[in-house]
Length: 257
Image 1: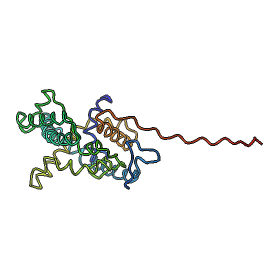
Image 2: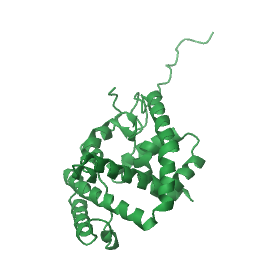
Image 3: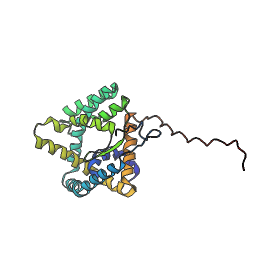
Image 4: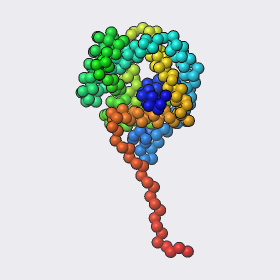
């Protein structure tokens, strides 16, 4: 597989990195402003990252491997479609909050089409009509409103985030299909299905990452921050300011001895 495959799969990889690889110091932009630190809690973040990675290695990955062998690909794709359909509805809300009316309308059409013709989102009919996903979340909305990302954080089970994206997590989780069900056991089952299904689809990508990344923590941190910055600005992020150069020492007017 080529690097382009990793690029295409990176969004989903970062979503599930909570169990895969896994104050308020504000960072002006994704790379950090002058004199500011991008990852001020790195020691803690690396410990959480190691916990998440071990959880994946000994629990999630084995389950996902068996799941991928037993469950046909078209069934796994249908599961993705159902969760993607719910994400389209939430994306429409966030596009409205960002004042992006055309993508918002497209998301509404996608959700309506797949909910009715696609049997509740099991079939992705809208993509056949040329309507693409946008997947806007509340963290992106906060970014469009002018909130900086803040310090990088790795959460247990949730994975890579920032201060800004962490504020958006409860709102994004509130749009999950699992919360439409009042039965607690059913909610956990739906969330578990989503995690395992996504991890099963990323088995090949995770192997590729193991081969190319010398430091997976740094690789995923930089990839996450760069991608989030790109998403906030819809792929047209402004150039980052250069750090100011250190002033040169003043020339001495005294003659050399």
